[in-house]
Each structure stands twice: as C-alpha cells, then as structure tokens.
Amino acid sequence: MGAVEQLVGLLSMEHRPFHEQLITALYHLIAENKRAQAECHRPEFALKTLLLDRKHSLEGKEEFQVYISQFFFLM
Image 1 (cartoon, helix red, strand yellow):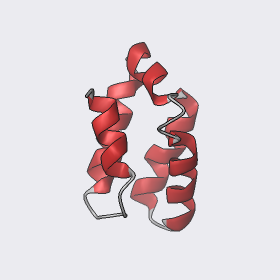
Image 2: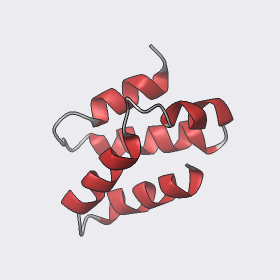
Image 3: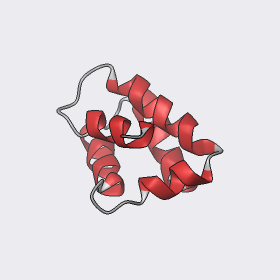
C-alpha cells in the first residue's frame, strides 16, 4: 500500500483534527511527484469528491481551505 493510498484512506474517515496534517502531507507528496499525482486520480479514491465534501463541511476553517484549494490546481 502506497503513501497516497494510506493518506486518502485516513482522510476518508470521519473528520478529526489531525486531518489538517494529513492533507498537508498529501499535498506536499503530490506537489512535485507526477506518479503520486496520477495515483490521486484512481477512481476508487474519489479524491475530488472527498475534498469537495470536506471543503464544504469545513467552511470557515482557513487552514483546510488553503490546501484543499491548491489540490485542485495540482490535479
């Protein structure tokens, strides 16, 4: 199981405060890694949907909004 898969799996769980660090780690992992970016597109992850849902549910929490918005730029 790769790092992207593990991070996405943890982010898929009910939101917890440590998810800010997970989102940050995933962002930095894919920022300059084309293979990791490609892995984020695996349909079974539904990462785009997960991030959009999380963005809406965490409206007003700046720390999450910044990285989530930047994910869409990389993807």
